[in-house]
Amino acid sequence: MRPRRSRCSSQRVRIHSVSLNARDLQICSGTYPAPVLPPVGLVPCSDGAGEVLAVGSGVREFSAGDRVVTHLSEAWQHGELGNEMQETALGGGRDGVLRKVVVLNEQSLLPIPDGMSYAEASCLPVAGLTAYHCLFGFERTLQPGQTLLVEGTGGVSMAALQLALSVGARPIVLSSSDDKLRKCVELGVAEGDCINYRSTPEWHTRVRELAPRGVDHTIEIGGRDTIIKAIQSTAPYGSVWVVGYMSDYAEPTAPGELDVAKAILYSQAVVRGVLCGSRALFRTYLAAHAARPEALRPLIECSFPFAEAHAAFQHLRKGAMGKVVIRCSD
Ligand SMILES: NC(=O)c1ccc[n+]([C@@H]2O[C@H](COP(=O)([O-])OP(=O)(O)OC[C@H]3O[C@@H](n4cnc5c(N)ncnc54)[C@H](OP(=O)(O)O)[C@@H]3O)[C@@H](O)[C@H]2O)c1
Image (tube, rainbow, N blue to C red; front, side, top):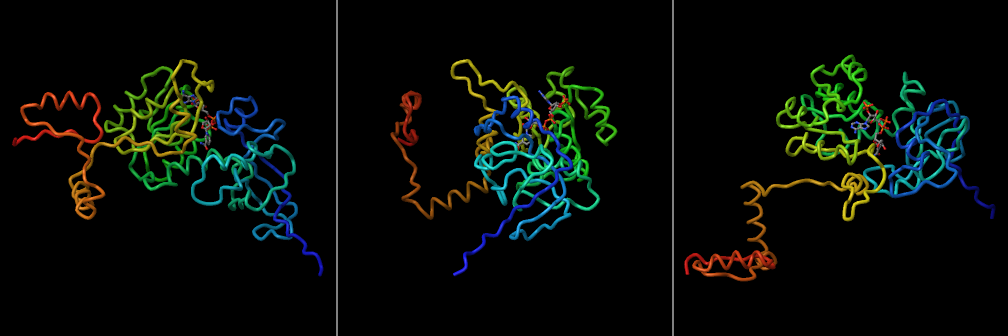
């Protein structure tokens, strides 16, 4: 029998442009806060665009001469993926694209749309896609007329701002620089919706003046220094998208102090405050009890006569398992 030749799904790509992310700087300077440590001697950078020079025999989507842009992690093809994606992340878990020629498999590349330059395409894989994921990747997408708060004027924030303007949403922008805020006005942001977070350190109060119910979406990139104000700026049932960490990367040193922003970022859990529920929801809940009375029968630890209501409260204070009930008709 003739030995089977394995089919190669790699292509050689001449990199024409690489864009930089805060992440690349953090990785190069040893301050990357992610739970997966990059290997020593790593080739940095994840975001590149270039031209396919040659393809392996198993490659179906691309051929020599195609213009392609890198995708951060080949393990992440669909849906959502946790920190596992870091292991195959370019310029993170594995060598990146800051080189002239790179060999990548098909899962790490996408075609560049016509009319888009290599430089433009190289700006999209991390900063742009992260902004797009927040605003259009989940159920409650950014809608025309809604408000979006962006912190700073870096790659992620500007991509989010452009997406907001493109769908007719209203961006409110924070920056440390009046010059950068002026440029945001040129892009289409209302002058009154620009806030300098250095000269207005209590910027969340100003955001609530501009959007009294709070904004519908916030792109939170600051971390420890901004997350509470970001939450305070956001409307009930709005969304705070925790994507970044520009604050001091050092772990807190005070005993018992945890970094909430970092914990949320790397859990990718949905953290949501909840207040009780509606009457309609209560009706549904009662129906669930009616359907499964034994399984859902309320756990009553003890009950007190009406005259001993005070003792019932004392009992609750000690900590009951389940519920404490007062018999009002005894
Ligand atoms: N979760 C993800 O997958 C993901 C993807 C991309 C980026 N990120 C993270 O998101 C953050 C931003 O990334 P980037 O690449 O867009 O960074 P970048 O291009 O370097 O921009 C950083 C900007 O952040 C702003 N900034 C810094 N401290 C701030 C503060 N306290 N309050 C408000 N704004 C502040 C500054 O804006 P001004 O100059 O206007 O003040 C600065 O220009 C980084 O922490 C990065 O690691 C995460």
